[in-house]
Length: 223
Image (cartoon, rainbow, N blue to C red; front, side, top):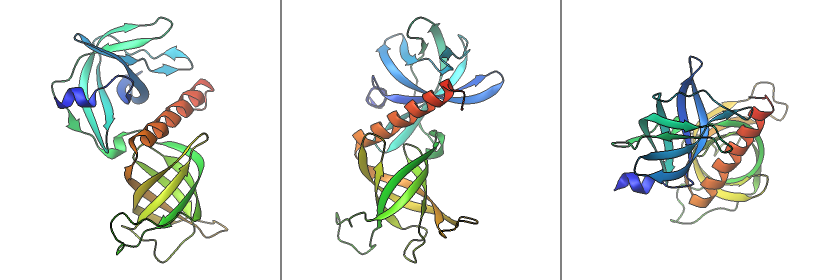
């Protein structure tokens, strides 16, 4: 069944829940699976478990291959021990999630890129040789500052080498937004890109990096 394929142990997910009267998004991970429910790493803030009560209605967003799925569920129990967790109910069905639903984080990461020729042969990729700066990143898109180029337009495809602190990987992404950066002395443009393909293990590494960064910033009180 599709549900068993998508919901897997160690999969990194996002929890959307109402906390202190506000809808909040938290990184989490599927710790284990039982007949009685799905065990999720509990959302933390400053190292303390967030007050998501038993019986609360939450939404869980799960990446799978190049898609995102979501399902509403109920918190069945919670544990505040050395490794705090929530147990939530199994979904009846999954629905497609908006790509924007997956959390984004402001970052400063280097990238190399090349604009792909729309008339290229299938599988033919240019070598990323232009430099750019990633300002915002998620598991399915990014915002980057790059030098303007007449071949860089809405719909352009790029091959991009993303340089995370400990690993690099290549993605194919499409430009969905382009705008000039006010007062930028280098005359660069900001481009929003949807990631269209990448190796599944590199998507995992991106999400792992974002979760780790978010957790460290929250623990430091930055978020």
